[in-house]
Image 1 (cartoon, protein in one colour):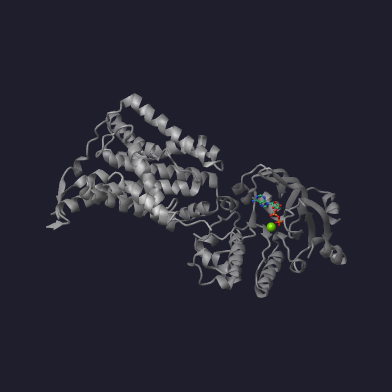
Image 2 (cartoon, chains in turn purple, cyan):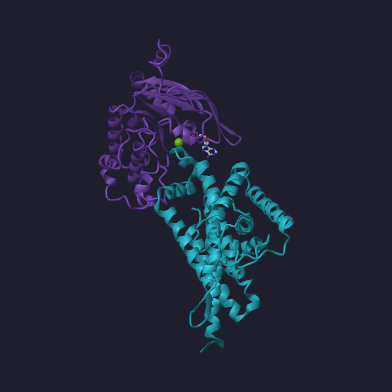
Length: 247
Length: 295
Ligand SMILES: Nc1ncnc2c1ncn2[C@@H]1O[C@H](COP(=O)(O)OP(=O)(O)O)[C@@H](O)[C@H]1O
Ligand SMILES: [Mg+2]
């Protein structure tokens, strides 16, 4: 596996992953959902987390952001341990989250939604740059968040985290339930972000979409990582992987 | 001139007094609604903080010679500080638990505060002088309105509008609305939600204390002045819809007026009418007049 090679590379700093999750456990109340997840993501990579419904993909992203009721193990962002930190301090490490349900606030208008997260790094996009990236949002700034279509909400949700200057993005099923033209627009955006050096951990059910953007893959099943592939090995094993994912 | 056999003078007079009472209801239920929105806690100590505001003004006046106008600013800040300390040390431990814990905890604070002041000052109450500048009266034609009561209405309306402006039109207000809607996610966007919660509680009880200072020259400053008022305020908040800021203010004023009218026509019933309205509203709209039913 490629990550093993990288982990053993000499010079700790050179091989410092953007994100390293080790032995992550997470619970909702009494229900133990993640059972020792290990994932690493290197600077500039797009890594996709695949798995059946209920495998724990969203829970993994929520654990990284610190919004699970209980989590244990180690989550390092650019080498900094964040497992004991509250959510707002994790966000300030330069990681930003686009939740599965988009997380658009109904009681805030589009401009307020967009400008809600305080910048954490100086080089985030301006509101105008976000509008240039997603022209659909132009002219909608005063609309209530609840009045947007699904596609517009997704663009707002992605635009919102680009304003903060965070360089590590966690995207939870950004294409779910969207029309093909919007899906391809989101694919273009992810590729553009990757060119600009953003690091992305993507959760997807849409495997074909994931294959247009991903560098590496982790397969999650019942709260455990059961498989990992780079681009070539994923394509080589495509048929059996699709079968095991039940798609 | 008569209306249903009641002199129009008396009617307008009670209307005016109803608006004065309604102003207190509005400011108190506004604070209660903001706190409930963000903390999801029904702050049973709200009346105690109202009383505390009046006592801080009274003590500041008698021990330190601080006048009414300074007290109107200082007492809410002092009480907000005390409230934030209470939130930080105690209240935050019960978030996410069964609502009964928040209820018991805030109610216990009522017992401690009221009991403490009863021991220190007795239950009969202390007079607090009306500020000199407002001792006159305005002749409205149909009634003589004491200037101070007019000031209470104006100050309450101003404070409600200012609070509305902060919530609806500022960045801090956007944070507050976001935390009200989805507090966890708001933290994930880098907003210090625990701090926001503490500030919200401080602001809410600060509003109660502001109303308490306004009330000090009208009522006797006494340990139970909050309990009597706050029961009606809870009814107001339930009628308006728990967590609806706009609903709290409008319902507060409206019920003050309804109460005033009732006093004219059937005065024995005036202290009960609010609860009758509450029952009727809940029958028709269980989430309150302005409340949103959860989807
Ligand atoms: N809020 C919650 N409370 C309790 N259990 C939950 C909650 N959210 C998810 N789960 C459970 O946790 C497991 C993992 O869920 P999730 O991470 O959402 O899966 P995925 O995103 O891979 O579809 C599932 O069994 C799901 O039922
Ligand atoms: Mg999911």
